Length: 484
Image (tube, rainbow, N blue to C red; front, side, top):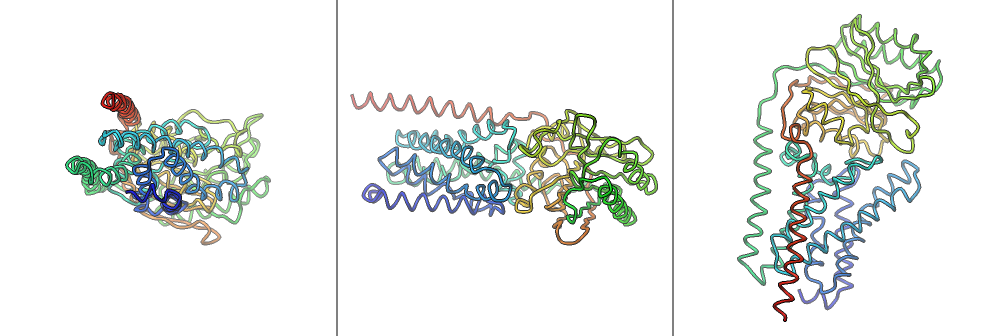
């Protein structure tokens, strides 16, 4: 496209603003999933057509940074974190995106079209995998979460985790731009590139459709989810005791409607170890009287240690606990993380417990999947504005591990999903003084490839990336030899 170099500033501006706007819409707090499939295309077209590598790099970095302004609002204005909490990680992400775009451009210009098509998807998948070890975020920044409403593609997570979905998301625009670039130069090669990409994407959708068509389990358990947002956090003993009594009354109401499990949110209030003898009998008596299991989240202070804890009240059984493993910095940096899983002793179906930010990480969710659970209970605390984005991250863990999810979030949603990621029921927690949801949850564990082999896909993406880099270096030498 000759006009790209005739008016580079104009085309560059249009490309940056277009991709940034598409990122904002496709990857925001309420992502519109189809948009993400085309979001990188304007910047990739610019990278393919411009003669200047620095124009391509600058446009890619700027579009990614502007496209993350939603997260600036979320981190700085909603969570009141310093601007650097957005600027530093997203500046790094923007620079990495520029590197991936340059790798795509370099391969395409050297005639290595197939390598160009996979270079950016492989590079970004590896970057997301590396970022998943960051204690502040885990996998929360993955582009894959934008596709949770696209159920056939969501099923890919059962094979690859989120990284396979990210790979597909970037494979499509890379293939489209490669095809556009090659059609005026090497039409047969353009057709081959487009055909390969289409075959991969079609295969993913067909796999997802077949998985979704599998019949649901006929064995079900009625789960009640319960929350009040009228008390954000009960930090005094009398207030906590009153709140627990109100939760107990509401929980017993749900059991009369058939609930066998009642799940309440994370960190309902402060529980000193000396106060457990007052609080525990209130909820345990409901469990014993009704035959239902109750789970509630508290901030439990024991001597010098504090735990973000889920307390589990099982009929006629000792009280069990689960301690949150992944803390939200800086708000929970002083809390002691847990190290073990918690499985309910009743009912007969294997059921696990995790807490909120644990769902941003591959573990302990993968450990629960490997233990064969049918359902994971997730007491949580979201921040209202992120009720859809962050509240739905847990859905991905259920698809990966082959189990249903019950998510009860203060300042968020009550959400139940099956092992395919289908939302079985959802209500906002700020829609009344006490909000509840009753859902018959299909109970089954579907052993998945991700259960068995874990994080194999990022390593395969790493091998593809190495091959693309080698191809770039080899193609460069070949091009130089031809010029000589």
